[in-house]
Each structure stands twice: as C-alpha cells, then as structure tokens.
Image (cartoon, rainbow, N blue to C red; front, side, top):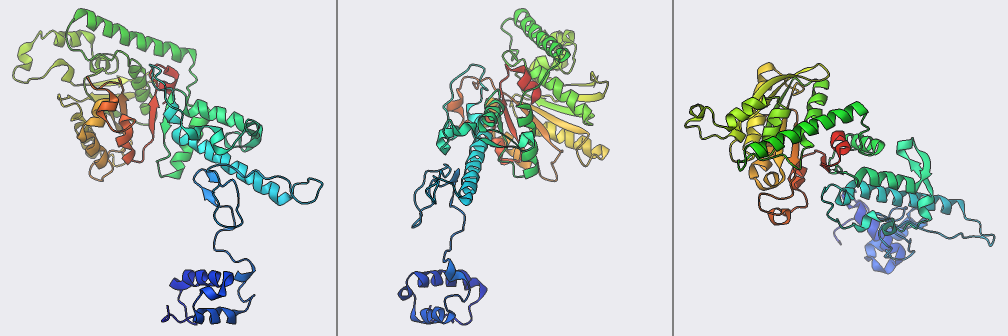
Length: 454
C-alpha cells in the first residue's frame, strides 16, 4: 500500500480507492496517513461522494424471490425472503401517505407478485396433475402466496396483466390462470431455455390458452374413433394370441391421436417425410393405426406363416419396420418410415437420426425443414440407457444436426420390474434432456384435450 501513489491512480484501482474513501468518511483515522492527507486535500464537496457516502445501490437490497421486508438504516438487516415492503403512512399527523412511499410500496408489491408468478412458471410442474393414478404430490412452499408475504386481502389488489394487454386485474385472477396453466394436466419446464424470445413465446401461448385445446365436435368424434380403433386392436391381440408378447399400448392409448396430430401438423408446416424410431411398447398399434399397415399382414407375420423368410435373421415381430406414403385428412402427402429396431431399446435413436440426415443430404435440405425425426421412448429406457445422452449431446453438432427431433416418452410408471425411485436419481425421466435448450412437457395421458394441445 505504501508503494501506491495517490496522485496517479489507474482505473483498475478505482474500486479500492473508493472503498478507502468511504472508510475515511466514516473514520479518518482508519486509513493510512498518506491516504488521509490526500482525501483531506479534496475538500468536502470535491466530487459529490461525501454528500451521500455509500457503495451500495440506491434501491432496496434484492433477495432471491423479491425484496427485503425492511430497509435497515445500519447494516444489512435480515428481512424475510421474498416479501414486499409494507409501509405505514408517515409525515404529518393527518395520516397522509407521502407520494414517494406510495410509489415504493407499489413497486415492491409488483416485484414480489412477479416473483410469485415466476415460481408457478418454474415449479408449477411439481404439483401438476400429470399422474393418471392421482398420487399426491407435496406442495412447494414457494407456490404459496403467504411465502411471499401476501395476505388474502392482497390477492384482491389490481396488478397489470400482460395477457390482457397490461390492464389491471385482481392478482387472484392471474394466480388462478397460472394454476390452471402450469398445475393442471400439463406440467411445463421451459425456463431453462436461454433464448428469451422462445421463453416469451411459449409463456404467452401457454397462458393465453391455459394449456388446453378447445376441441370441436368433429375433432372429438375423430379422437374417439381413433381411441376405439386402438382399443379394439389391443383387445383382439390379447384374445387371439394368448400368452404371446405383444407389448401392448394399453394404458397409453392417447399416444395414437397424439401421433395423428404430429403428422397432420407437420405436413401443414411443410414436412414431407418423418422417420420414426421406437422400441416395443405400442409398436404393433402404431404400425396398424398410424402407419396404416394392414392388420391382416401383421397377423400373418405374427403367426410365422412364412418362417423361411426370417430364417437366420433372429428377428421377431415387434422389431419389424415399415414405410408408407400417406395422404392426411387435409389432403397433403407425407412419407413415413418406421425403423427396424433391435432388442437394445434405444439403439434405434442414432439410426433414425442418421437416416434422416442422409435423406436431407441427398436432397440438399440444409435447413431441415422438409424432414423430421420422431422418437418414441419408454420412461425407464430414456433415463437409463447411455445412448440417449450421447444422441442428445451430438444432436446440435454440424455433422449430425437434422433440424430437430420430437421425443415422445410413454411413461408406464414402472421400468419392467423397477419403480422410478429405484431406477433413476432425478424426479423425471426427461431430466437428462435439460442439457439442451428445449422445452419439456409432462402430460396426463388420460386428458385428451391436454394431449392434443401439446
């Protein structure tokens, strides 16, 4: 310190000098003699610092979920996390609240409210009704208004609502909408996406619709018809081929209308080809009711009517692939390819993506707008097999990128014989996918309007 020249400080030392100057203003004897003499030579009003000596910001100290309950005059204080400042009227005895205090209280209220709203967007999925069996889920403390210091009366205070164009609405009304959006039949994880425009687009779309599809009668009839076809097919397999492995889609029948929607929506956005990769569960039903493979042909293969065709191949019925050209209900053409699948459930993932990349390279589709990969996983396999992480990790590299892959995870809540809490260290099978900048949706498969919306 003695080697430092107070008369010629450089810019890197300015924070150090300011800290010394603040110490000098509090107690001149606390700084070295050379610095004390230098500061005394500046005079009281030399730079304006002495008029309000502080190194902290002028606004109240920010906490994790809002501001401190108090603004202590001395020291840092220990206000409750996330609560807003509630100030009583001060000044003259007429009880009038100063305008500045009113403005500060309003800002504090709005910031604490926004912190509560953000908790629903970030953690509402933890209590979303995504389990068809209705298992109870513990309520996180930061989804309770009281955690942020709000009372019942506070919930009736108006606050600007972005969905209503900034119009003031009761805070309770916004909270109810957030509960329906993020704690209903769809749980969304999207705040880990770093692109602000993507987060804002998702947030606006989800909160405006409350994550619900408004289905017309024709759409409802179509879905009912597809579910009926799915169930009838499964019933026939179970009765006709008793004891045979069929890897039924039973319990996840809504997968079929979901895939219908993917294909219909994809063609409307310019897709001309989809490569599908999936393991065993639901494969026969997807072949029959999505790929439109003739059931007669499926049953013919099931009965090994031509065993010599598969002599030496070691393959089985639920490993077979299929390709078909389809015309959607909107009249658009699309080519679907279901990849052959080995017994190692997730090995098909890089095969399907590599197949699509080869197709794109062949036709010069450098943007990946014409083709898409659709991968269907089981929950235990997605979390438990390392090839999934490897595929996700490589998916954005220039040599492997295809423009995007849609992953659908069929969660039957047990991995063959293993419960989730004994098979993975994370709450969701999808947590490995959070390494990428992609939104993740957890959907209750028994709620068709939620499934179709997603």
